[in-house]
Amino acid sequence: MRTDTTVRDVMHREFLGASESDSLAAAADLMVSEETDCLVVVRGSRPVGRLACREALGVLLDAESADADVEAAVERTVGSAMGPPLPTVAPDDALAAVEERLVAEGVDRVVAVEEDEAVGVVTAGDVLAARTPRSGDAAPGGAFGEQSPGESRRMRTRSPDADGGTDPAVDASTTDADGSPTQGVCEACGALVPDLVTANGQAVCPECREA
Image (cartoon, rainbow, N blue to C red):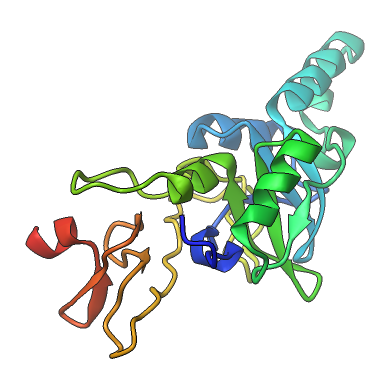
């Protein structure tokens, strides 16, 4: 991993976020459909909490047991089950700082915040991928195939009731002295690689260039 790799180089700009007033049942359904176990809860664009799968399920089960009317149980909101916010980092922080936060806080992801606004997410898998030397073999790009739900906001989140998915955002690559891309994120597959090349005006990895 390059020592100057930053959060901005690997963070996912598109992710799912829930608001406190969103239906807990809808958020839980979205977690299942998107195969994620933790959602970023935002107020406007500011991260204010997290919704973990276990906590959401516990609240729903407790509500169904306590309420005679099952419909009342599914009216519970995300705010009734959310936990404290995920740790935050700045986009320009070194990736090493993310590693420290992940270990110190005992979490598997952090939220990148700029001017009090959530602008991205970095997972432990993203950090591991950035640290692992890449060979000529293709490797999966980005470890955030899981995402998080909510209303449509600047961070391009997805509402629990919306259709369609989201794609990981692509960051620009770094360049060498003559302006040719070197290490960075492939604009075609999203993988962080040490040997980007320019093809058709895009910075891509060798595998995508040959495709």
